[in-house]
Length: 315
Length: 253
Image 1 (cartoon, rainbow over the protein chains, first blue to last red):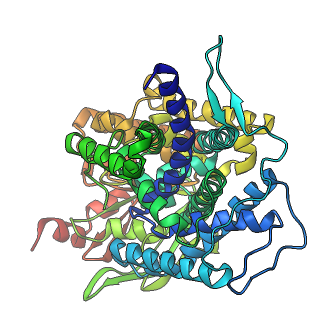
Image 2: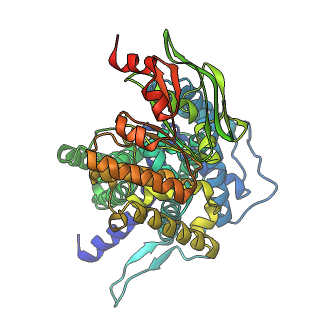
Image 3: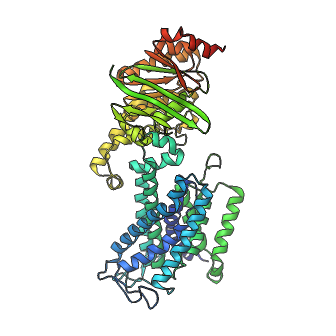
């Protein structure tokens, strides 16, 4: 691999890795306050991709209850992405009310919430299939008007990137920036850190923990929905199981970066993105294997992940 | 008497154990009210009841005349009741400044979107919150360590920071759970002065759980004595000190 190609692959990896990061952050936020992995997140990722598709006014295929239907209006892609994210956030809120809060209020073991979220994931995937069938969808003319590739090279050295990856990278970075602002400069962000540390004390300082947990599920769903749309834009929406393989990768990012660590999810996402991009084309079928092998090696030396805290207090 | 807090027939059972049994008293605005009793007498449970962490089995709580018996902890905090803990509960992974800022947020107005966009109003409020937090850190002599994670602070520093954090809620009623625990005699004397000082500066009413008898006697206007969940004496330090029931509870039969 020559140097120019190497750089090109690194940049490609950064673009995909940034999506991994925002997807994994959805897991991270919920893990940091509830101490559990929300398996429904991968289904919300899938839903977000479909929401955006529908909001663009695109017609569904030949199978399912919604076959050959479309919304009477179509939003331009940037607005549809935002709308898809917001709807996915709303789904996150529903999931918390249906699958998490009832168990939490009864003081159930966190493991039960994890199983419950797995149930929600399966149910959502099946509902999607019932509504729109198992076929693949791609966004119609999402980036119309933009050239298929952009040369980011300097000084005569070409660095050709697919436009879609540039768009994905920009959107992901905007989302990451907004999330950073949210965590550091809003009362919700500070409250989230407080609840993650000690929900009882946080409530005694005037923080409504139930409302904050709802907000966290909304943000998590929003991130998942945007990530789903961006991956759907890059490849296609491959069907109702779209999010499941991707969900595994999100978990790998979560663990690699360190459970519950926000910077960890970003670093882990970018790292896995780059590593995957550097897998030579003739071995591309082994991308997942390489990513998970790296995860195992890192965990061997740092069981708490790259930026995670050592396991001590969390229940 | 102008009662800030009214505790009326408050009872809490845990299974067969009655942790707090039909306790009634009133705390007047501006006083320092001591709560003493042997270990396991129900003092901390009483604090948990007042702050909404534990719902009472029966009885009522009124704060400034309003019934807060069924209110949630965050609602009670927003009404102006703050507390500290016997075993300090700071957010140990966060900085001293953040610990205090979090407690101020009950009184801020910036929404999420304005915060993310950092509108001028949001920036102004953020700056005001920061300045007030630094002021409170100065009060407990920790302003130099504002950005350090508090997990590494000494025991005494953590105790004082926890009080500063409670003050950040801008409370009218402050509940202190064994603020002098683990302190030597000199530190306890300084603590007494500090508690009197903050009562004056912030117009506080203070309820305080403490084992150290000289500290309680010297500091409190009135004292309630609990034993096995029951209120066995209530009055001035001198009255309580000479009460036969109190002497018996402390010295045994």
